[in-house]
Figure 1 (tube, rainbow, N blue to C red):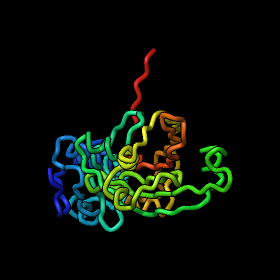
Figure 2: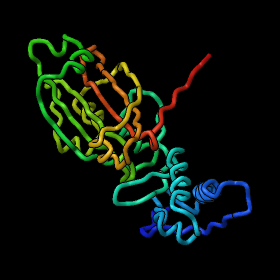
Figure 3: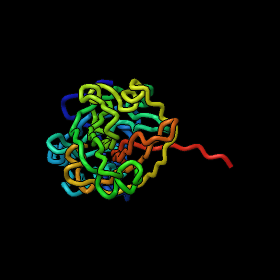
Length: 252
């Protein structure tokens, strides 16, 4: 369903004789419109002033209703845009795969904005992650930082540290996933050690991901080795927690 350019005005009926608070009645009506498809992912709600004037509500009442849905991940506030319905969460299994490839296989349209490509000595955290066998004798690493979007919506900031022997062009990085680029060079990725966490976004990260601060993000760090045991890459990725989730299968 295509996104509508104009803000959507919902037909909401409030019962002022009900013991249910007005903010909760409003949030329930908006949620119902999202669930039945009246509001599609990407649709914008009318602004608070218009909403409160039309429904005869106080602005704090409307703000509380909207904030409740923001906290539940159904709506998102964006600078210069307003309040939008959140796109369906991207769900991935915990496997040694590329986000770019997984998005394409799931029917999404992945795109990349190349933010930075630099070469230099790794910092202490990267050194500790990849080990002295990689960073010893003053060995430099290539640092690649990208903004990955799904269907035009910013989803993740990906930072990858690569050994200098793996020369990936900026043009390839902008058009393809990193793992696809590495496979084309004959790299056979075999094993990875991965950790997942969470933290708050920095102001710069929030601006890139179009999130209002304070906002949480999912973090992932991954060290990858090829089939000969050589270091391939160290990834430091952050994902919008409102749009991304990991799945695992557990067997008892």
